[in-house]
Image 1 (cartoon, rainbow, N blue to C red):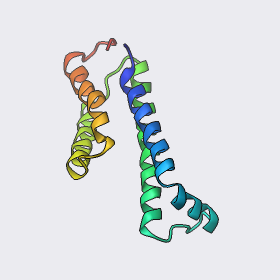
Image 2: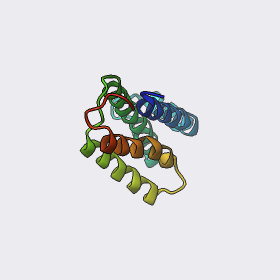
Image 3: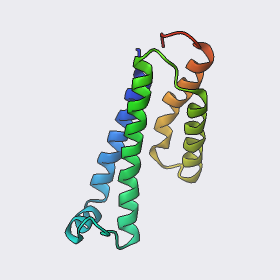
Length: 122
C-alpha cells in the first residue's frame, strides 16, 4: 500500500490523544475550570498537557510524512534517523508505552530511503 507510513503515524497520534483524554479527564477538567491561561497548577496537569501536546506534534509529523509520500518522495534520511533515535529513547525510558507502535513506519522510512532514492513508488 502506498503512503501508509504517514497514515500509520496519524492513527498512532489519534490513539495517543484519545488515550490521553480518557486517562487525564480529571486533570483536563481542572485546567478548563481554572482557565487555560496559566491554568497548570500541579504535576498531573503538566503531565496531561504534555501528553496531549505530544499527540498533536505526532499528528503534525504524520501529516508531513503523508505529504512527502504523496509527492513521491522519501522522508529525508536525517529526519527519519532523528525520529528513530527519539523513539528509541522513548522505548528505553518507558518500555511499557506506545512508542513501540512507531517502529514500523520509522524503519520503513529508512529502508525506503536506502532502496528507493529517486523512485516514486513505496
